[in-house]
Length: 106
Image (cartoon, rainbow, N blue to C red; front, top):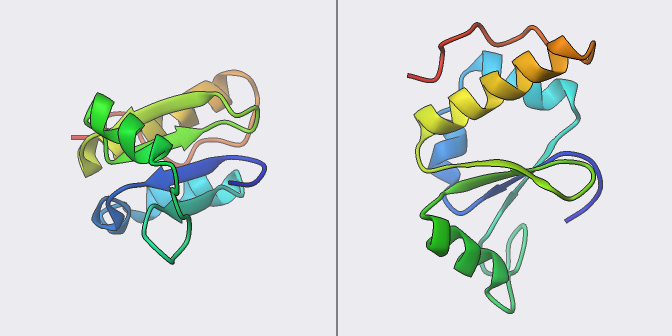
């Protein structure tokens, strides 16, 4: 998957629904988006990612640089809120933040 922040997507439509504010958070972190599609961005040959997505009924998964999961989302609204939460947490610790106003996930 690579190093750094990674947004793994089972449904590319959820990414297309993000607004400039949420995209700015990903850009500040130099996050990479990867889609689970055959012969495309990321091939899931053993279905490990697909199984995880199905088990937790999510369409997006945000990995931290240390390969731990920051969070998952079922909808575009949940993904927006996840990114707003990340933005707030980074701001609290002096990291790159401040792009997403509070309460933008709904």
